[in-house]
Length: 71
Image (cartoon, rainbow, N blue to C red; front, side, top):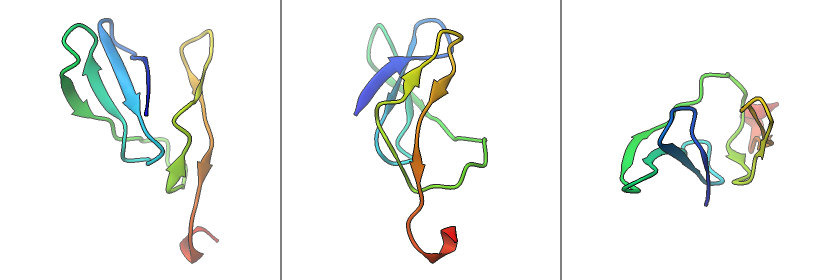
C-alpha cells in the first residue's frame, strides 16, 4: 500500500497493487471516504502501488494484464 496526495484539498489516495484497491482518505482523520473507480479504459489486473507523481498532479503507473482475455 502507498498513500498519495489526492486531487481534492484535504484528501489522500491509498493505492494497492490491485486496480480495484484505490480509496479516497480524509487526510486529517484517515477515515476512508470512497473507493476510486478508474475510467481511463486501460486494461489490466495488477498495477504498482508506487506511481510517479508529476509536477502537474497527474500520475504515471504500470498496469499488467493476466490471462487470455488480455490478448
